[in-house]
Image (tube, rainbow, N blue to C red):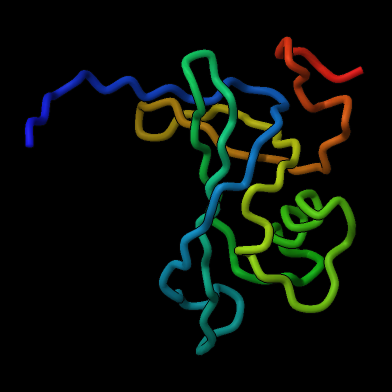
Length: 136
């Protein structure tokens, strides 16, 4: 097997609103609950794909695995479903769905990073048509 090196071409998603496709998740280790001593929180890392100038760009979100109405994951699931979630939700069933994400940049330890600060359902007008522009 031949392998070659290539320069790192990491690109942050641009700031603003973007249609993002939920491409998967990873269950992370439990951690101590910050507000309830002796209890733990389950964490999940979500992966979204956003179309960039040079191809798809991945954006990650680290969230508490909770569907309490005040939890950030509740808002993500609501945006992906287009309605308020109820009952049991299987994250695998949401893979391939899209929503609008709001991206902001920030500096951390001297490096520019990006994060998702908002999620909303996608409308047909938000989806690109064959020309790469908004829908009708």
